[in-house]
Length: 203
View 1 (cartoon, rainbow, N blue to C red):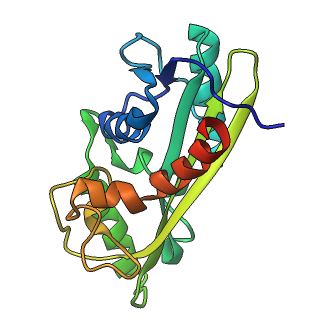
View 2 (spheres, rainbow, N blue to C red; view 1 turned 60 degrees about the vertical axis):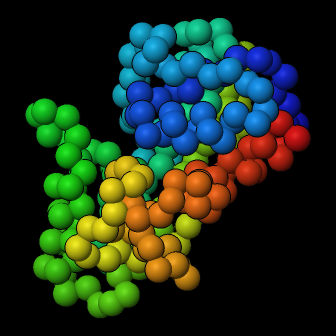
């Protein structure tokens, strides 16, 4: 049985400032105060699953058990058809360097591999987001969102974060990196998952 959220405070189980900003904006209309795992000094648990849902569950349950508050996590990434679904759940890992994450490097890696494989155009891809809302007693709710599109080159736009500058959603002329943030929020994979969360747990 699904559970409604009836608290006033929610932990966002993420240290990613871009995600925190997006989720904070999406939650604003519901009068819920949010605090991030980073602000609470929580560690980042190891993401050992090979699915978005599995990793979302790890993060949300860890934050809920450590704080005694409901926690919302997001696991998301881009899956490129011609790369057999990579980077997928390893999207952030592709950007890791010894000095932090370098998404320009990661986007270049994606394009280089597509070129090496002579992948035909359009180079189809999709952004996926899985949200997990977990309570301290172990209950959780899972919601998934997907936006289909294709990989383009060169990188376009200074908005967004992650792989946004090389992702052109179907039917659009601007990449997620070029879009006004409000427009991206309205149609993103995270927004689609979030709409299901709101309908089920906040409606």
